[in-house]
Amino acid sequence: MELTEENLRQIIRQVLQENSDPNRIPIGVSNHHIHLTKEDFHTLFPGQEMEVFKPLKQPNEFASKQKVDIVGPKGEIKGVRVLGPCRSHSQVEIARSETFGIGVDAPIRLSGHLDGAPSVKLRTKDGEVTVQGVIAAKRHIHMSLEDAERFGVKLGDSVSVEIDSPERKTIYSDVIARPRKDFVLEMHLDTDEASAANVGPNTFGRIIPNPNE
Image (cartoon, rainbow, N blue to C red; front, side):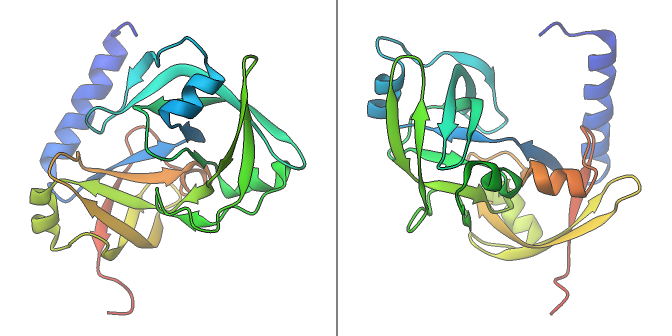
């Protein structure tokens, strides 16, 4: 992507905002996507390697050039991007609003928590696989160990986050802290949640006391 003058201004504004308040948490909007095992990837894309379309914020993660159709009992979602690198278990993440159109009841779960999750078919022009593991991603915050210490949280803690968005200031509770040594600070919302809170490219959140505490 060409770095235009307006892109540069936006990056500078974001850096200044992040540095002005260490408690601000950048918001990342997570569109529907797919994680694949190596075996499933090569069934769907025989003879191919996963190609990087663009890097994601978290280290070593990327959106690939490959896309797949999700086929459920009642309908399908076409052209869903595969994220890399490959994982030990294939997984499909969609918004709850999308579950009705394809006829599956996807539970709201953290990534990798797939017990009892429904199955769908994944299809390309070259292959098809059935994947047990359709979820709507539970909102969470990636953070470094230093961030976790600063916020006073540990892995799996549930926090409340106030989303500072124009005209639709929103508080989301039960946001799960996910600290790891190499993680970059970012809260993940799906498209339904982001739309409800009017989240834009420069929207930030801030951890606040839980209402029940």
